Length: 57
Image (cartoon, rainbow, N blue to C red; front, side):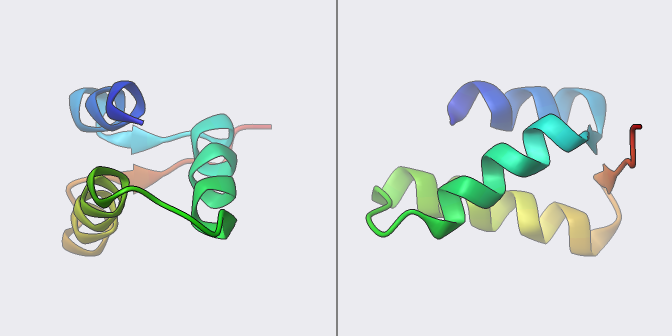
């Protein structure tokens, strides 16, 4: 999770592969406190426009 977080912040976007991985983490029943914090930060960055979600085909 930390690796994905760093990649998202470094490049400023979330591609389909990372989006699907994040989605599977959200559906997981037991998230660690660290994973919850990182997901909250990613969602906040998307809302602020610092990170965009790309639609790669």
